[in-house]
Amino acid sequence: MIITFIGGGNMATAMIGGMLAQGFTGQEIHVVEPDDVKRAALGSQYGIGTSAPGEAIPNSTAVLFAVKPQQLKAVASELQPQIGDALVISIAAGIRVDTLSRFMSGHQRIIRVMPNTPALVQAGISGVYASEAVTEADRALTSRILDSIGEQVWVDDEHQIDGITAISGSGPAYIFYFMEALQAAARAQGFAPEVAHKLAYQTFAGAVKLALNSEDDAGTLQQKVTSKGGTTERAIKALESSEVRQTIIAAASAAAARSRELGEELGRDIEP
Ligand SMILES: NC(=O)C1=CN([C@@H]2O[C@H](COP(=O)(O)OP(=O)(O)OC[C@H]3O[C@@H](n4cnc5c(N)ncnc54)[C@H](O)[C@@H]3O)[C@@H](O)[C@H]2O)C=CC1
Ligand SMILES: O=C(O)[C@@H]1CCC=N1
Image (cartoon, rainbow, N blue to C red):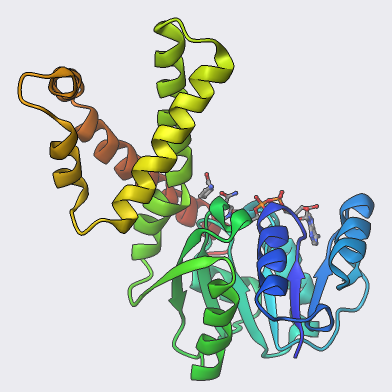
């Protein structure tokens, strides 16, 4: 078995690192990457096969596209003759299965995945949509690959990938935004940068660990911090009066709309 990654950037490196940690061997992974420095580092660090674009790729069980969405058309159409009817997995944001299929002269066995950057520490979550032509063995292989970078949610309706992109794909950025804001709040209370960093990061880490280990839902956990007439109540009131909850929902909705728009933009120039 060989899984060939097309593109050896951030997400591919995260996936390759996770796969090797979970039992895939170096002989089972190949990566095509134009950047000489990245390619050499991937080969020496992970003991996997590497090649530059334009060179022949190995006969692969699955080909996983991890290039930027805007590069996918050129890259996929050029590689199609070498890929034959092998399983194709794409993690490119916004590119729909039918668009990729048309980039590849009607290729049918396609799985679309939306991972997220916590994959770098094997704590990701991926949304997955499989086209009709995909076999049970294709699903099992994809599931095994994604298990190595975290959790996964399979959807039956491709439109839901836009929602997954808005929640978990872009989501880490919302959390980092909040973390940065909490650090700024600590600085405003007069703490030195390293103390502000420690207070904010450990509060996040502790709250997430508590939520994951608790029978209570997040709303109940919030209430348990909020003493009547106390400090948290005052802070939550300030958040509510600024409609922060509604703003988060609206922000995710804007991200989902952008995902749909990208799908249209990236598919448009190949419409018949
Ligand atoms: N960064 C994120 O949070 C997420 C990214 N994605 C998707 O993952 C994909 C990859 O993103 P990143 O890894 O962040 O980007 P990246 O820029 O780190 O990696 C892309 C790689 O493709 C290589 N490349 C360029 N032309 C190539 C060619 N002709 N053949 C082979 N490789 C080529 C580049 O040298 C680069 O190393 C994108 O499509 C993005 O939409 C999906 C979910 C989350
Ligand atoms: O911002 C983006 O378009 C990509 C998709 C999800 C995370 N990063």
